[in-house]
Image 1 (cartoon, rainbow, N blue to C red):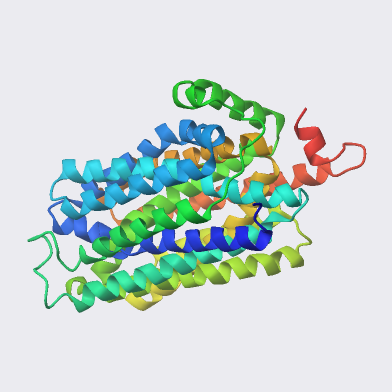
Image 2: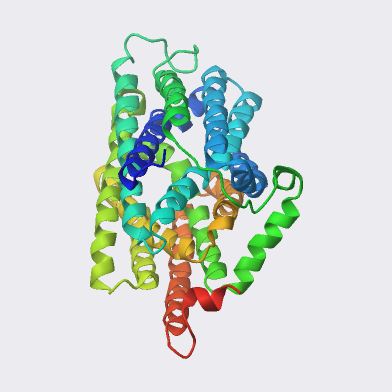
Length: 434
C-alpha cells in the first residue's frame, strides 16, 4: 500500500527525532568521559579524526549500497552499528577500546549518511517531481535539533541527578558521565524496531549500482560522482564549501566541552550546565532554520546568497567567540554559531539535491558527506596539535577565517545559477546533465 505524503513525513520526522535524541543523550559529556577515563585532549582529538577517516573510507561504497539494496536495509544496518558502538563506549577504559567504539560509530554514520534522506526525497518526488524541497529539509533539520536538544537536556540532567549516588567518573562502568549512554542504548533498540515497521520502500525499477559493485568497486562509484561534478559547475563549489565547514565544525564539536570546562572550573559538579550550553546552541539552530525560510523570501529564493550571508554570519560569530574570556558571553556567541550553521544548512542541501539525479542520490550525498568528514579528519590531527600546543581559541580563529573565505564560493554559485536561468543558456538541469 502506497504511503501518503503525510505518512511519509510523519515517519521521517519521527525517526529523525528519535535518532538524534539518542545521539544527543551522551553528547554533552562524551569528551569529558574520555578524559575522565585517562585520555588526553590530543588523544580525544585523534579519536575524532579516526572516526572521521573511517567515514571517509566507507561513505562512498555504503552510499552506493543504499542505491543497490534499498535505503531501509542500509538504515537498519547503520542503526545496528551505532547501537554496538554505544555498548562498546560504555565499557571503554583505554585508547584501543575507545578506538573500536569510534570505528563502529563511524561505520554506522557512514551507512546512515544519505540513506533515509534519499528515501524521504525520492518518496516525496514520486508524487510531485517539482516539489520545493527546501521547506521540507528545513523542517527535518528542526526535528533533528529538537531531538538533539532534548537528548542533551535529558542526558546531562540524569548525569547531574546521579552524581551523588553513582561512583565517581573514571572509577566504574556506570558513572554519571556513562548513565546517558545506557539510556541511548535503550532508545536505539526501540528505534531499530520502529524503522523496521514504519519505513515502507518500493523497489526501484532500475538500480544505479549492483550490490557487488557497491561493495567492491568504489572506483566506479567515485567515477560516477566525479562525472556528475564535471557536468555541473555548482557541485565542485559546494564540495569545496562542505570540506571547509566540515573541518571547522569538527573542531567546535571536539573542543567545546574542555573549553567551557576551563571557563567554569566546576564541570564535575555541574553536568547539567553542559546540556544547557549545547541545548541552547540547538535551540538557536531551530531559530536559524526558521530564519532561513524568511531569508529565502527576502532574497527571492536566491539560495547561493542565502548560504553566503549565513556562512558569513557563522564566521563572524566564531571570531567573536574566540575573544571571550567570560563564561556567559562565550556561551552567547557559541549559540550564535549554532544559529548561523543551521541557517546555512537547508539552502546548502537544497542546492546540492537540485544538482543530483534521483538514481545517484544516495551515492552523491555520501560523496558530499565524505568530503565533510575528510575536512574533519584533517582538522582533528592538525588543529588538535595546535590546540594542545597553543590554545582552543587560536584554533577556532583559524577555522573562522577559513569559513569566511569559503562563503565566497556561494556567491560564485549564485552567479552560475542565474546564468543558467537565462533563456539563451537553458534551464539549469538541462545544461547540467546530458
